[in-house]
Amino acid sequence: MNHTTLKPAIGEVVMRQDTPAERVLVVQAGELRVERIESGGRPQLIATIGPDEMVGEMALIGDQRHSATVTVSRGPAELLAVKADDLLQAAIYDSDLVMELLALSSHRCRQTNHHLALILEGLDALSTRNTPLLERCCEELDKSADQALCSTSKLLRRLAQTLNQP
Image (cartoon, rainbow, N blue to C red; front, side, top):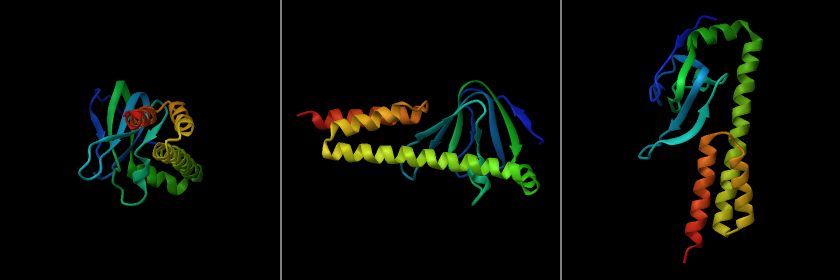
């Protein structure tokens, strides 16, 4: 499949939230930071993407706009860029490619559901002051290599400390 190789600098934005999706990126080297900002809010780290992972594929289906901003966080970065239209054209004739894209999407949805359930359970544990449950949720979040989830665990623990102060 036709592609170009990009070597963006650390801090460079490679995809911007709410812009049209023109390409999908595969990380060869380096790390990408995925952040989403809600109206009136501030950017929230939602994922990190490392070597052999793809980013931008969600925008191929639906409104074809990026749902988050993606920035190079660790380098040197090397990214393979495939035009979205080329990937969609290839998918028409390659059922294995379609299945791989669906498997990736399904895996990410399942991971997100698991992590969201842990965060909600952690918030519930905070509201009921159930320290053992909160710690279990935080330990599960800490097991992830994803910086966003480790940060969430730290935030839950800080909130627990704040609630326990007189």
